[in-house]
Image 1: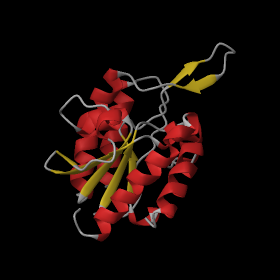
Image 2: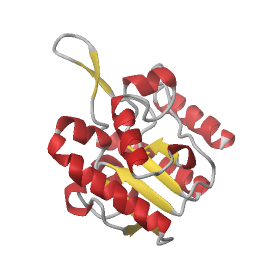
Image 3: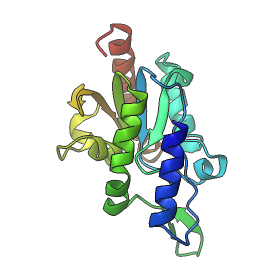
Length: 190
């Protein structure tokens, strides 16, 4: 994994020459049974250098705990490894969704990371990682909570944990989807 990280750092330095991109690498046990893949780091993640430690991460942790899934047993990463930003109307630096170019740029690196971790199941969190992992053009609204296959392994799409913050009506759906994941893990289906 150290070699992977060094090669990725060198690659990003070359592609974004002259720009300072803070990379946030995945964390968790190598060969974890489950790999969570998010969209991209936010401000808190870029500051701490860890995935899903901000508000959405706290939300994710609460859902995992509620389903008795231990985060420390999961490998957690993002499809895009740096924080995509833009200037707000007030002139502040704020998050933005990754561009298609950024997603395509990191797709081979994500595929390599998945191969290195070799999880039994990949869990995508939102549309960006779903599309980065799956060859088909799917939306999270169509396939959340369903067991699919992508890149030769089980794929379990979930809404992004931030979606529940912005749309509280998704709270019950999200909890039910995470409970399904926990049940399938307990039953050995994935």
